[in-house]
Each structure stands twice: as C-alpha cells, then as structure tokens.
Image (cartoon, rainbow, N blue to C red):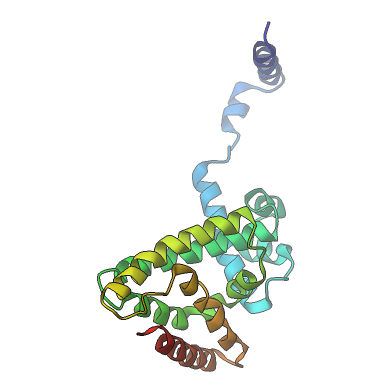
Length: 212
C-alpha cells in the first residue's frame, strides 16, 4: 500500500470520527472561510497598511495595521508573513497603477514625460514605499520581479520618445529607473505642497538632461 493510500484512509477515519462525535447538522452549519472573505481581508489589510505607513512610517508595529484593518493578527500574518511581504505587496500594487498610466500615455510621443510628471503628483502619497524601494536589497527575488515589470513598462515609452527624437538615443531603460529615486529627494520637504513643487523642479532639471 502506498503512502498516499495510507494518508487517504487516515483522513477518512478522522472524518468518520468527527461525524460520530458531532451531529451532521452542526458540521454543516459551521461557517467555513470562503475566498470572498479572504480577498476582502487582504484588501482591507493593504488599505490599512498604506494609510498607517504614510502616517507613522514603515517601522510601525504590524499589530497597529491589523487593528486598523479590523482583522486579527493571525489573519494579517496568514496573508503577509512579515513586514517585507506586506511592503512588497504594496509596491506591486503601486506598479499596477504605474502600468495603467503608462498604457494611457502609450500613444503619445511624450508619454514618457507624462508618466514621470504623474509621479510628481503621487510621490508624497507613496512616500514610505519610495523610501523602502531605495533601501531594499536589489537581489531579493520579489524585488527582482518588480524591476522586470518596471523595465517592461518604461521600455516602450522610452522607445517612442527616442523614435520622435524627444530623448537622447543613448538613454537606456535602466537610466529611466534611476529617476524616481532622484525625485524622492523632494520628500524631505516639510509638507505635501512643497514636496510636489520640489519634485516638479527636480523633474524639469532631469528632463532637460534627457533631451537631445
């Protein structure tokens, strides 16, 4: 008899014991976790994490995030085993938004510039993620995948700009990936208005360096 057969029989035995010890109607009435609940919990955690990280920084106790999301700690850790997993999920979600904007700008010769300009408007909203992105280990497998995604997002926009001679032909996608960390310098300003103003000023200087 194979190990699989032995395991299957053992599972059947346990189920029969459960049925004998508890009436079937009680078993069928037990509320089982469903996918919809799980997805809603994950979404609530991500929303709470973004809010709490922005208000208190990325070193805030994860219990605070669980409380804000109105979920138990077990639910939080079941979805995100540690702080890195949670922050990586938020970064992935941010890149989703970047990808959406890139698609909207893909038909414009200056779509690359439009995308960077949109970054200046949302930089302070995602300040903790930007800071984490700057300090994270670039060899981390999850971060490597995010870099690959960003490369694929920026590549067609850069090619479009170069085709219309809006960018120097020698520029690479890797050059583009350096711009957001440079814009993050604006986060040291005292309030959101000044941060946006500084980010736009930095971007203007950088864009002048990109043009032929």
